[in-house]
Image 1 (cartoon, rainbow, N blue to C red):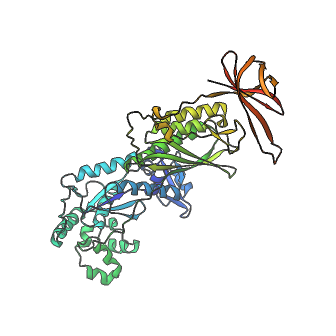
Image 2 (image 1 turned 60 degrees about the horizontal axis):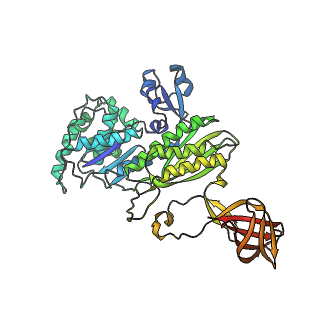
Image 3 (image 1 turned 90 degrees about the vertical axis):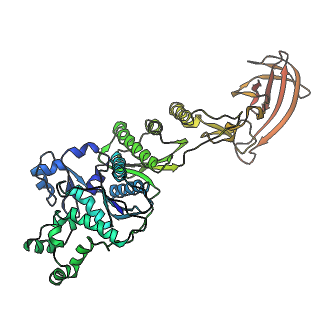
Length: 506
């Protein structure tokens, strides 16, 4: 048994995926290569717009008609979405043609549950803004005919009955019986459902053959003698022996959403509106294959021809759409581009859901994603160079460091509190405070200034250090750790610039 997922007007649906409200309006898809309208919505068809018209002819029929251009990018993304969804229901899938995916149901236990199974597939695709029909048949061709008949022809053409499941190794007579049932159901369908060539269809129409049943009533050899061997393919589609092997494919591992804006975007609101839909679609697609979002690659195409690119890493991979969208929103509110935005591309980086089992005395951040969002908001206020984790630079210069993006996977966050060292900490004054130091035999004996003023009771040092002697940033200093008469511990130093107190020990 085979199942075929068929998406009617696939090219038009691909373009309207990010405008689901437009499905109820009059919209026509224009193909520049065909120089005419190729697909229309139901509302446009009711207004008299039909495929084959030029854009001006279509606009003359319907004043409120919206013309959309065909997009190969959107069709590629819709195909990837279709394959990824289908693969969640069967590992044996084939990308038959644009908007058509064939599944081999062998090995699936669907006895008595076929209608429920079909409804689930259609519901998931509908949530991804792809309206589909699912056909079932004993051969791939009959399954495709079943799907197309549900989408293109009135329901009065034969009642569809839930097909019986074949055994794991069906005999030829079982398949032949299933084919006969399908033929009986499709006998009243127009002959055009078999997709014959236009010339063949016109000849058969002149002979008075208008339905599939009337066509199959003739001997195939007699018709082949008059119309040529090419007509035999029409009989093969209705044959029990036309079970071809599927060209199995694996769904792509990329999860991409992209749009080319019809008008240049100069404000944040419309960009965030589309981005929110992208996040929703990507999280749904990943949820189907039991994955979550580990990060995003964001690309904004500008009218100047330049691109703004940014990679986002999700501290704790998640599928929660509100969390993912807030992360992007917080960043985009601070972005300023030199020209208007004409395109948007968002790639989701998939990952398996994380699970951690901590020890009795281990801990981690309660909500890493919320913490990352807080850091992003702080960076927007004080600058990204002033928020993060301090990292020592490869130099002996004291207090030489730079800020780095916090790592949420650091082993320190899961270290037991009892295992952490507890040294005396130096609370630095930035910048160091200038003071006066009295020396006796090159040892400090008194300090004058603020916040330190008093005699020195104990000293340790001097500690000599220097560096960068090879360029203009050369430096040298003498350091002491001292205790004053009030019992406080300080670090002081002397350099070419003078004497300073660097910090106090807590």
